Image 1 (cartoon, rainbow, N blue to C red):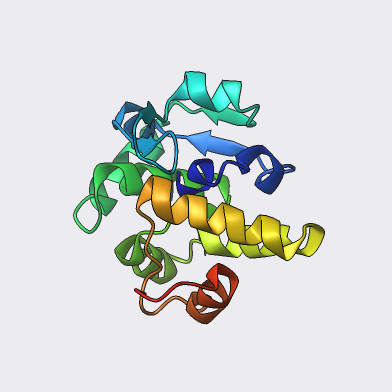
Image 2 (cartoon, rainbow, N blue to C red; image 1 turned 30 degrees about the vertical axis):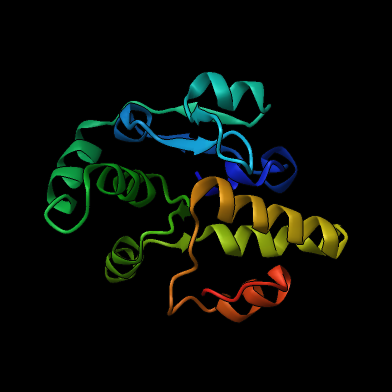
Amino acid sequence: MNIVATGRAADILETRGLLLTPAVLGESIYIYGDDARESRLRIDEELLAQLKLRFRAVSLTDEEIALAVRYSEQVDDGEAQTLAVGATQRVVVLTDDGRAIRYAATLGITTTTTLDIIKAWTAHVEPAQVRLALRAMRSRANYAVPRQHALREWYAEHLEDAIDL
């Protein structure tokens, strides 16, 4: 949910819908409401609706439950359920969890990351907007680009002042 912290989630996810599993919806995920970090926002269905994001809460099928149980030996419950839905519904899984990405690859499940999605969005916006979105994500979600991420240098270039990567 790092994309929500950018303040531009509706624009970035414009044509994309999200499928949210029970474990993901049940997690208490918070971001800071502002760059001063004076308030916190809980990312839940209500906030996603306010942001006008297209999403659907999914109920797991018996097959997805069985897969999620198996996958939970390798990744946390939210990632396991998400990978199970990705496997059965043949949808791209959005995750920034390195372990889940590596495990998904062994299962033949296609993944994408927050930075992949944001980079695709940048083709339609000014560099200053990209910089503001990335700074907000770093500040409000405590986002740190993984060391091995293919877009690590792109991220640093677009932040301009990213000295502590």
